[in-house]
Image 1 (cartoon, rainbow, N blue to C red):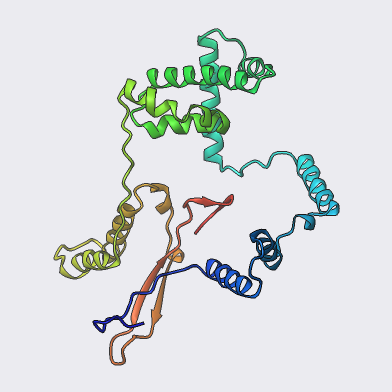
Image 2 (cartoon, rainbow, N blue to C red):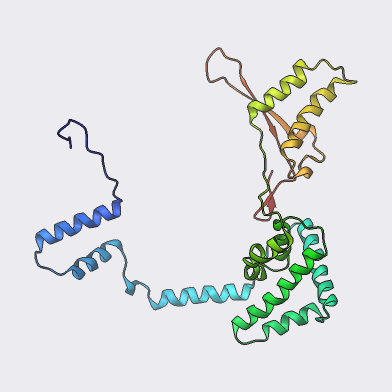
Length: 277
């Protein structure tokens, strides 16, 4: 549609579902003047496939059987690595030490007493009391300076307890001990910057090495170590077989081919219980 000035009227975005319902409503109103709105809504529901009667008893029984199977399977625990298991064991030992220091008794007894209340709110109240006290003791008797560290502690012990004390940490614990709540910055390196660094090391550096292999190996590994500083173990035991050079044809004819170096790191973040490479 053109405006009087010659400019085109801007189009207004309208979702397809809303537009289809509007068109059906217009057709229905023109064909059946005076009919009530609920009839139209029921017609639209039939067209969309929604019907409360479609949830049959057989379907309900099917999902009940699935839930019974899931109940028999029990809780699906995460596939933690050896480092995570060791960290969990160390944190549980500190929790036992806290219970011994405060003369609460055995740690499992403390949890059973809290869960013995029939009212879920009472259970949560007593559980939160014990674990908030543990967090306070943990920070007071350690060199923890980061808020993320104490959050990791409570996550390690119990995810459920962490959810109960999650808001209490930034509101009470962080200001009391002046914990640093800033997020850790993780820097990256653009490939253009890496090429510039390597050009200075491989081409422009006049220093003579005892063996030129040191020049080739040392500088890229130092650059990669700087980029993976958050995971220093990623570069442990790097071998020649972990580095792969790939040659690609140039996008423009007459230009030199594109050389790509691929580094396969063995110690990287886990996904779904498996280490990514």
